[in-house]
Figure 1 (tube, rainbow, N blue to C red):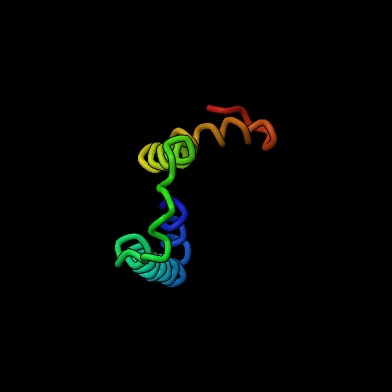
Figure 2 (cartoon, rainbow, N blue to C red):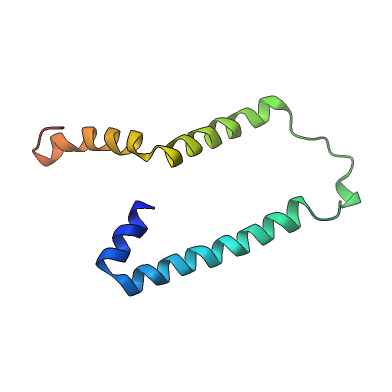
Length: 93
C-alpha cells in the first residue's frame, strides 16, 4: 500500500495504471479461487482425504504473519530501518 501511495504522488498516471492492474488481477484471481474451491465437486478426486492439521500448520503461520504485518506494517518497517541504517551511515531513530 505504501508503494502505491508513493507511486501516485510521484507518477500519478502510472500509479493509477498500477492500481487498476492490481484490481483487475485481484478480480481474476478471485474468479479462479471461486471456480476452484467453491465450484461443483469433481468426483474423480472424491477419494482423496483432506489436508491434515500438521500439513496445514505452516500455511496458518504464514497467513497469520501476513495478516499481522498487513495490519501493522510499522513493525516490519521499523525492523528494516534498524537493519539498514548502519549500512547507510546513519543512526537508527
